[in-house]
Amino acid sequence: MARHQYFHHVEHRKQQTHSKSTLWLSLIITLIFTIVEFVGGLVSNSLALLSDSFHMLSDVAALGLSMIAIYFASRPPTSRYTFGFLRLEILAAFLNGLALVVISLWIFYEAIIRMIYPKPIDSNLMLGVATIGLLVNIILTVILVRSLKTENNINIQSALWHFMGDLLNSVGVIVAVILIHFTGIQLIDPILSMIIALVILRGGYKIMRNTWQILMEAVPEGLDIDEIIAAMTAVEGVLDVHEFHLWSITTDHHSLSAHVVLESRNSEDAYQTINQLERLLKEDYHLSHTTLQIEHLDVNHLDAQYFEHVREAQ
Image 1 (cartoon, rainbow, N blue to C red):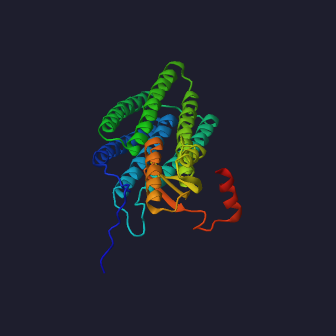
Image 2 (cartoon, rainbow, N blue to C red):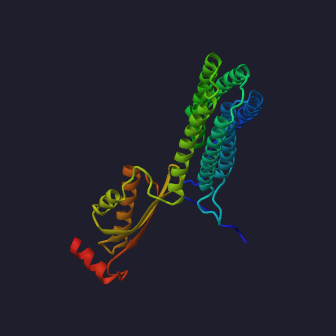
Image 3 (cartoon, rainbow, N blue to C red):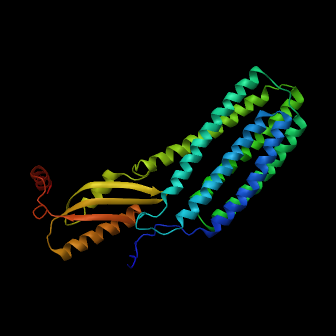
């Protein structure tokens, strides 16, 4: 039995060759330094280094999930997954955000324990590891910025924000170790850890909030359904728009479906009106993936109360 070819006007997959190589390189560099920073944190007794190493570990997980998401996002739709695998990108981001929140809470807990039971810190080792971390994060940030100039990709953008946060964390650790060296106040280390945890918590919350909106199929930010419906009903020949739904499959991939009640029963007029609506949605609201169902008050035998509502609005 011949398999049906699933054709879509809007491509439900992404070609991201350059992004793959960039993420692989970033993943390898990040993983190596995560191990170095974790061992350095254990040896020096620095909670700030340990907390930053766990932040880097979350970056490794994020990059790994992004690699998986990119692989599946490049696969074409199937008879079972008609939207392709684009939503996996959002699931990966949500899990990454959840991991960041859990890690930040663990750092808070460890910081409180460290305040109650302080431990001596090897400031020289802490400074050396933090300096290496700063250099690594600068290199990774440059790599990702160059990649974005070549190929715009949400996974690369997400990774860039992570590493910019890591870069700031590395600067913070260096400042803290200098203060500890000159003041001898060991309490600076757990306090810095809490600040890093707040940065991680904020990033995790933002990622979870944004992905949650997509998973709940909320109206994408920047789009107003009342405005869109008003623009559609203003098109000549359109009596009403209902059963209106607007959601995102993944970032920057929006879909719209609606029932459109038309004035004319002539099929040629109906197609021209629908084409006009599709041009309006694409040009004014950048909505390319639209599904519009044609209806007529008499032909579709709509509810009597609804019938009167539309007649009065004419």
